[in-house]
Structure formats: C-alpha cells, structure tokens
Image: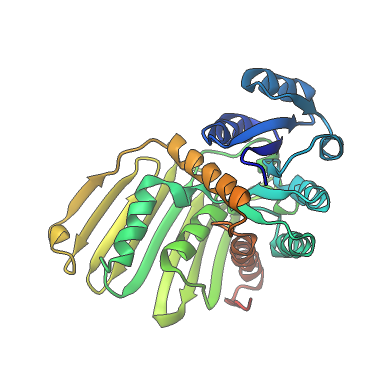
Length: 331
C-alpha cells in the first residue's frame, strides 16, 4: 500500500460534503481523488471546493476508471448495500457511514462479501470519538461506577424530513437514523451484548417510527433503557450509567461529563467536567483511524461486525413492538 491513501467518496450530500470530506482532508496521508453523487452539480461543487481530480454521477464508472485504495460511502440508507457491494467487488476497503445497512441481514451480506474479497470494512459510529464519550469510557474502565446496574439513555432531533421521513423499509425513521448511534454507544461503553430486547414504537402518520423506547437486558442483570424522539426541540443526546460505586453522565454535543464516585477520590463529590474539543475533532479522529488502518493493514477500529450487532438490536426493537413481547438475542 502506498503512503498516500487514495480515496473515493460516494455521496456528496450534507454529511459527506460537510463532515466526512473535511475530516479526510485532516489526515496527512490521505487524499480524495474522486467523488460521486447522483446530483452532478453537487459532485462538481465539492470537487472544485476540495481540489478533487474527478467527479462522477455513477460510482461504477469511478470504480472502473480511477485507481483508489478505499471508498467512503455516505448515501441514504436504502442505497448503501448496492454501493458497498460494488466497491467490495472492485476490491476496495470500505468506510460506511452508520447504520451501514437497512437491517442486520444486509449488513451481514456486506461483511461476508468483504471477507471473501479480503477487504476491510469500518462503520462510521463517530460518537466513539466524541471527547465527552471517550472520557466516559476511560472513567468506566477505571471503575468509576463500580459494578454497572442501570443505563438510561436518550437521543433525538427535530422532525425528520426528506428520505428520513419514509417507512423503515425505505430506510427512514429515528431508529435507523439515531437509534443505531445510541445503541452502539451503549454496547461500546459496556463492552457487552444484550440477552434480550423489548421495544415500543410510536408511528408517524407517514409510516415511520417517530418515538421509541426499548430496554436491553444484559448479562449480570444490567438493564439499559433507551428513548428516541423526533420531537425534541434543540436535540437530545445523553447516556447516564449507575453502579455500585457511583454514577456518570455524558451529554453530546456539549461534551459535558458529570460524575460522582465512591471509588475514585477525585470524584467523591458531584463533579461537572467541561471536556475541551469541538465536534469536528470527532470526525477527523474517525477518518484518520480509518486511513491508518488501510495504510498499515491493521484491523478496523469499528469493524463491520459491530455494525451487524447494532442492527440485530434495531431489528429486535421492530420485532418486539410487533409481537408485544421481548425478543431473545442470538448472534
């Protein structure tokens, strides 16, 4: 592999253009050499703005004509699978923005195909690189709350629009948009996987999940209660973990961590920590980690298998709501 990793960007919408492309440019050993969007004007604009050599409306043409090492995919959920499979068959490593697929079956198809072609997949769960959540993870590993007993988490936004305001069968809804994020965060923070999932969904008149609540039951009698909503003015994003020695909470995007602990003297009294760093740093750290894994041939820091696990849980929320009972989780 060359020292400079050549990347193709598939998807020049708001996230690809506004977050991922600038983040890639923060990596000194990477360069976007081609970009793709079905809206040619968007592809042309990002190519001009970021000095990208080639732009296309068809990623198959880019994969055929341009020598690249890896592909970054940031397209609507319903379009991810086709773009991922084309890139894998072309022998390219993949960064796929969350949720990586519409469901666990599609995600597993991507993982299996990548293994067969001996390419690697990273899933874009950028909040693992958010400063406040990284501190939370560090303190949990130091035993700040002792034995974990309960997790309470919430994530939300204003009303959804565009393709996000379509039924989940078409890739829309809060569970696939934001539920995957908060679910991945909990799995990562606990370093565990639930035994069962119980979910309730409030549906929008247009057929997509609007407000949801679900409980994940983990080994050692740990319960994680998650709530999602598209009716939260100003947004909502917190995780709070309680245990035998204390409690810790991290809010995003403020990157505020609140902690009280009987196990760590520094936090004997309730402490609020304003963690420095803006959220552009989160995207930059994520893309630098991907580029470094491609460059060195090392394991992806957030492998495709992690994306499959998250989507199994989201699938179970839908199933539990339909069946009106808990769903046992078997990987």
